[in-house]
Image (cartoon, rainbow, N blue to C red; front, side, top):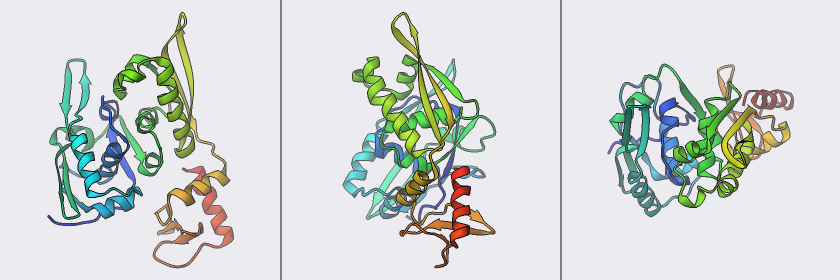
Amino acid sequence: MKNRNLSERNYSRQTHVLVNAKYALNINEIDIILTLLTEVYKEDKDFKDYNFTLADFNKKTKKTLTSRDLNTCVKSLMSKPLELMVSEQNWIIVNWFSYFEYNKGLISCRFDKRLKPFLLDIKERFVISDLRHILAMRSSYAKRIYLLLKEYSKIGKRTFDVEELQTILKVPKSLKTYSNFKMKVLIRAKKDIDKFSDIKIELEEIKQLRKVVKITFVIKKNDTDLKTFIQIIRELHPNQDLYEYGGRMIRCSDKGLLYWAGTLHNLSKENAKKAWEHLHENR
C-alpha cells in the first residue's frame, strides 16, 4: 500500500443529484465521506486509491478515532447505500466506496465507480462546500441540510414538503412526527448552520389547516460579527491555510495571531486587522 498524506485542501464539489440523494449517516460516517471528497480534484478523470494514515485523518478532522472505531464506522457505512434519483425513471442504489482497507495504521479506499458522473468532470448544477464549515457542526442532519441549502444560497430560499425532506434525510420513525422533527432536526440544524457556516437560515412553516406540510428555508449570508468570527477561526482552524495574499498563504497560530505560512513572521497589527476583515467579508 503506497502511503501519502491527505491534502490540506478543504473544498469539494458534488452534483445536485448527489447532494439530494437519500441517505442517513452518523457524524463520523458523513465526516469520512466529506473529508475524502476533498481529495477528488476537478481535473481527475477517474477515482484513485486514496492512501493515508489514520493519524493523518484524525489530524485533518480533529478526531481521535482508533482502529476499532474506524472498523465499526466503516462496517456501518458500507451497510448504508445511498439512493440517487437521476430522473423520475432512473434511480441508482450504490455504496460510497468500492472497498475500504486498514493495515497497521494505513488506510486505502476508493469511491465506487458508479459515482463518477456525480463527482468527476462536473459541468453544471453542482455545489462547492468548505469542509471546515461542515466538520464543526455537531449534528449529522445539520451537515446534510447545509449542503441542501448551500446550493440555493444565491436564490435565497428553498422549500421542501416535510415528507420529502424527511425522505431525503431518511429520518427514523421516531422523527416522523413534526414536533420531534422540528426540535431534533430543524432547530439543531439551524443552530449549527448559523454558528459555524457561511450562511444563516430562518424557517417558515406552511400549513394546511393546522398541519405543517411544507418548510421554506430563507437563506442569507451569515453576518456573524467580526469578533465572534475571529474566535471561531482561532478555535477551529489553527495552523490551517486561510487565504493567499501576494503569493503567500496566511494562517492563524495557536496563539491566535495571523502569520505567513512557512515562516515565523506574524502579520503587523495593521495588516492583521485588514486580513481579518477580508476573511470575514469573504467567508
